[in-house]
Image 1 (cartoon, one colour):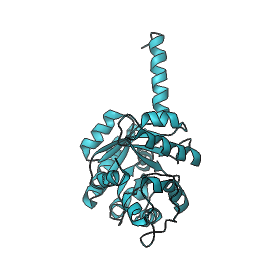
Image 2: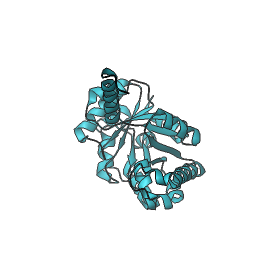
Image 3: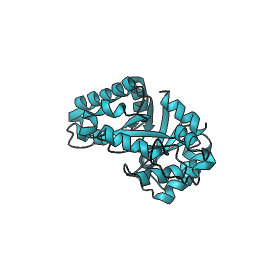
Length: 255
């Protein structure tokens, strides 16, 4: 699937399932990218990946020839966004969006003039998308994370931001935002679910995509049935630990 085809699919609110990568291991990332996920997202905010790791992950994902390459950038910054797009990312997930103004700034960072302020230097990206700014703009996704009290309060205005392709729920921070004592605090399950529903409905009303991070495939399936249009599954580090622990328990005959 080309970058443009994937961007159109997400903008068209077609369902997609992705995988989350936090480890700097392009060989492992390439294997994951061959499994059939619609996209693989590399985490530059909380992941253990620097710029070279992001670049190598883009190569690995494209080598799989199956998944689109996405990056969660470390911050809402033109340099951080432009750099990963130049490295070949199909789109960016931008954290800590509090207002429509924040979302508009993120959009501008992904678009070339006259529609934005992305600096021209596509480097590897021109091999995937092409050097023409208008074509690149159309093939590049920008997603705003809703994960703070301010972002939740302003979600309708954020979703209405011109050029924004979708929103993405960071469930750990969102649970803290609605009063959780921890990122998994069950005491706020009610307000958390209300917030998750509110975000999906705001995106639907604005006609943009709604994505969410999930701990596993069953939860991803439930969120897609709930109205989310794309969902990311867990991450490589968590699955590595879970698999190793399960095999150790099996070898020792433990329950």
